[in-house]
Length: 251
Image (cartoon, rainbow, N blue to C red; front, side):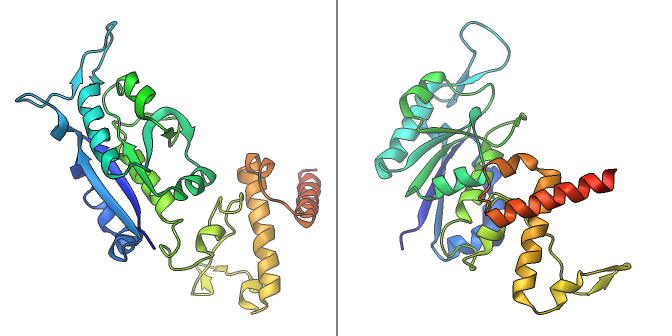
């Protein structure tokens, strides 16, 4: 199986030392399931000072990433990986979600461009971008942390990376719902006991309990997810019962 490759274009490649050298991502790289290549945009800048930013046309605060170094860097990587999808980390992009991560995991490779300063010259987006991805409605100093999030969210969906086929699907958002509560030993901790049903050994009852808990947690904490979640008739019946029970309790 060919490893999925992530090419990350950044002005600060040193930021990625550590996050990609630990835990699941490191093991996936060791197994050649994932390949991560860092490209310093500054290496593609001309002149003695290798300038990669300039003042914005029209005035305003901050600086803008120049198009020439970015263009040269993207084209160099694209020449090696012509089928790879070019993704810009951008607050104007579509929100990273489990479904988006699943979609991106089907690609043979991703070229992730990390923005900096006030952003990149818009012409780069017009010429090269296949996608814009945002990780939330907040401001970061640059796209590097967003790129790490994309690699982690997408990489763990690659077959073999987690080492357990159903692990990713049972995680929160894997099936459109929040994950059920998890417990481990000891059976009692600071006066709180593990639900008896989890100690019963009855896998069918445990499965039903977990599904009900997942539905309840989603209904209480993220009801917006229920709109697009894959729900059976039994699930809808359970939700109706929970709503009635909560309404009775409130009365």
